[in-house]
Image (cartoon, rainbow, N blue to C red; front, side, top):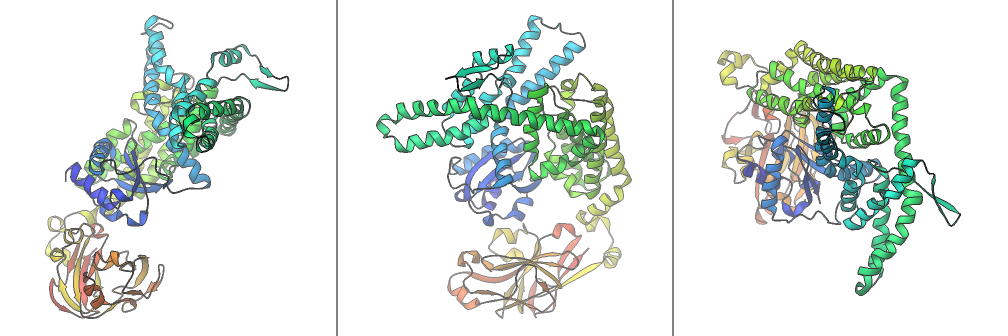
Length: 619
């Protein structure tokens, strides 16, 4: 399938452009904010060749497509014609920690390109100086230093823009707040050690160097958004252009300089110092924990909070020890993909793991994490141990990154300095330990890959006969027909999995398995089941009957119920459904068909009775 075809499938599967509130992307994933996530056909998305995984996190529905993300984003923009609204007020409201993570993500991610670019340049600048290729203070050194340092020194300006967009306020007002924090007299006073500027002999505006800071500008823009909106909604339009910004600045800037920015600065300082105290208390233990848990932070989205701490460490100390620990996890994740590549016999997984290895060593680990590591238990264990051991080594030697960079084999120069020996030892250790564990546990990967192989190529008829089989019975009496005869292409093309269809002669659907009810759709037209062997089944009544919104359906079970073969699952009024203009065919799909060697129907035509053998699964 082409990128356009897959982008079209993704758009359809997320509920169409009318279900999209906003659409953005990062390095590897499309990030949707949707009106109703219940409309998402996740199985349909996961079946697409380029999709490495799907994740719901921090109010976003994320589709991981790896390095092709910009191409997918471009096609989706063309397909939607701007139908989604990034400024919509309909965005679901989150609370507590999820809201904080979502906010940090929305503010920090847009500012990363210049930060990563500058960090790369700074890393090479350090390397050129260390190797004696460039003289400190020379004209070339100075111009490269300016190129690499501007985005860090004036970081509040970058954050002001993304914070304004996040809090839906005027970007230029936000930039004015950043300009206030970076005003020359404030920076000069901080440099000279002057306590501050006395105001009315009552309070003091402290002189603090806010360059490279994170929290002060975010707090200031957040409060400013309320003040600006307050005046804009109450001052007549005729004079609002003049008085709204004037009154906002008169109020917010004193509050910013006296309260918000100093508070944010010291909170950030204490967070950075607090983290350093924990690391100093037991460097090896702290390093192992940070390096081992990094994959889980990425999976849950909480790595955005860690990114803010990393930036704060750089602002406070001029380097980040946590960044060096995370670096080891990056190498471990890339090495895990390489290990799977060396072990797996599955052609598709070989391709995925090879490309994930390359992107991983270049600093983009999501393809490795979502496309490879989460699929294999031994790969996740190896990644955690390899990353943890290597990070413990860097922590022991006091290794650090001296710039905010995307950790990769290309950014080694950014680690030149105190403790560099830890990087020298840690990098190969991360790779060797991770790959070594995978090689030791390769049998589990090979075994897990076997169901995806082609049985016609790997087994003889005698061997197939000796395979463990799982029998599924018919949930209803009626006439069997092949899925290919259905008008719905999702079912006909087996996008959701292999199965069979039945023209029912009765209005009662009974359980075809011993197992549990995995899901009951709100519209009652479909039920998800999982049998005692792990076979996942979807019973879907009719085509497009979701539009009936539960009318003519009576469900007899609920999610989590234990069921036996023959138990009543639901009753439906077949005649009324047909009269309403809908097809009432009973469709039975094995949604995890790819897990098994084959899913074979006992017949593809003719009559069948409830309880008769319907599908045979070669496990």
